Structures are given as structure tokens and as C-alpha cells.
Amino acid sequence: MRRLAALLSSLLLLISSAHAQNRPEPIRLCVSTLQNSSHSAVDTAWQRDQLIKMFDRINKSKDVTRGKAARIDTVLLETDTETDPAVRDQNCQFILHTNVEEVIDAGSSDASSQRPRSVEIGSARGPRINAPDHNRATVAYRIMRAGELETWASDVVTAHDPLPDAMLISHLMDQVANRVADKLWGRH
Image 1 (cartoon, rainbow, N blue to C red):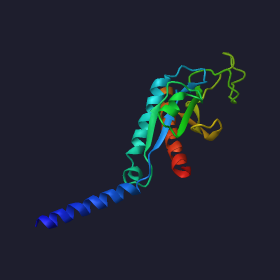
Image 2 (cartoon, rainbow, N blue to C red):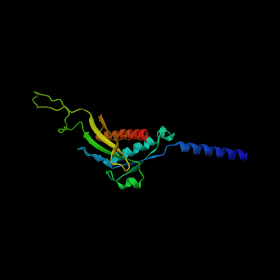
Image 3 (cartoon, rainbow, N blue to C red):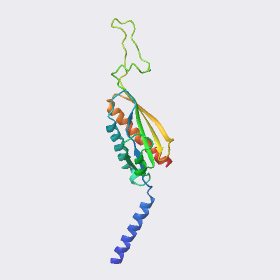
Image 4 (cartoon, rainbow, N blue to C red):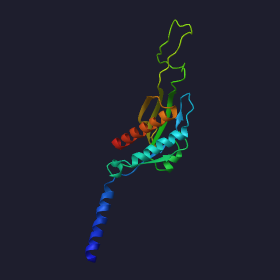
């Protein structure tokens, strides 16, 4: 009976080690401080935390837990520069830079925007600008390989929604995380 138990335990150990060897190596992704190029106040620390939480959720997906996709380990950087020494110290393979480029609140006049608007003419009250009922936000991101100064991949995500600005940007952070994960898994 002892021999059977020893044989079964050694067989389980072999199977588990073979299964562990089939798992792809984790991808180390440094996430720089979120930039804000928009003219709106954005809580960049909170939005970056939302981005990191989305990567945590991605790591709990079926593909990652079953070993079909590599786990993405995120490392927070305290800067947004391309040559941060923490990238080397933290042994990162890729660096993610994000930038909130535009936040337009549906209730604002947004006089600097070049979007066409309807104007009521001939009114005794004067012209009235009809703002859309949706807020708009745009976030750009770029992925760089550690040790390289050229952009490896980049994209822009935009959303129109009646959600408050902070929630709208948070949804864009989810989209960024999903797109970055797809790029890292597809090209890594």
C-alpha cells in the first residue's frame, strides 16, 4: 500500500511540474506615471490605480489561470520618462506610458474645440449653443521595450458617454489594459 501511495504521489509531482513548465513566463510591465495633457483636472494617481487593477483582473482570466496566456506583472514607476533607472532595477521587459489627451464635459462650452455645433439664429435671447449630452475623453498610450527609445506599439482610445469624467476615463483605462495585454500576448 505504501508503494502505491509513493507511486501516486511521485506521479502527481511529475504531472504538476510538467504542467508548470508549459506555462508561459510572466511579462514584466513597468507602468509610468499617468500624464494629463488635457485642460481638465484629472486624478492621475487614482486613474493609474484603476489601470493596475484592470491588469490584476486580466491576470485572473481563464486564459492566464489555465496557462494559455502569460501573466502580466505590473511595476509602478514614479516618473514618466523613457530612461527611468527603475526599469532596469525592476527587470521590466516593457514600459507603458499613458496620457489623458482630452476630457470634454458635456456641460461645458468647450470654446476651444473645433467640433461643429448647432447655433439657433434669430432668437431674441441671442445664439444658443447646444452641447451634446455625452462627455468625451481620449487617452493615448504607448508601449516601449526596455532599453529601447522607440515606441514598440501605440494606440488612442476615445469614449463618448454620459458618465462623469472620472468614470469615463476609468473605462478608458480598462480598454488600455485590455489592448496592452492583447499586444503583449500577441507579439511577445
